[in-house]
Image (cartoon, rainbow, N blue to C red):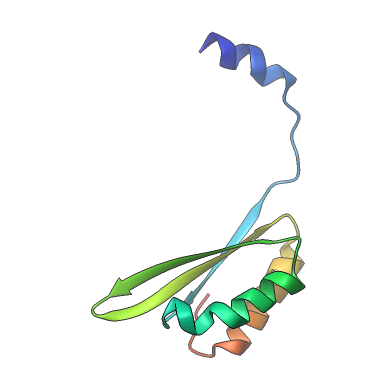
Length: 88
């Protein structure tokens, strides 16, 4: 606790990180290629894939993180265009 109290005043803030989740009802293997392309085209974003299984169906939540809302929205729009069954 004392170390944290000493450290906090010296920390500087940065831009807030924004995230947006796109849910795709397909197995991770089906989205790997387009997701890799998206990551190459948007290097300023952090892109995470979190697979799930629900009622025997596979899917993945794709989380886009960054500090530029417009860039995140552009990447999400492209991802949704590639997978029309995706929801955001």
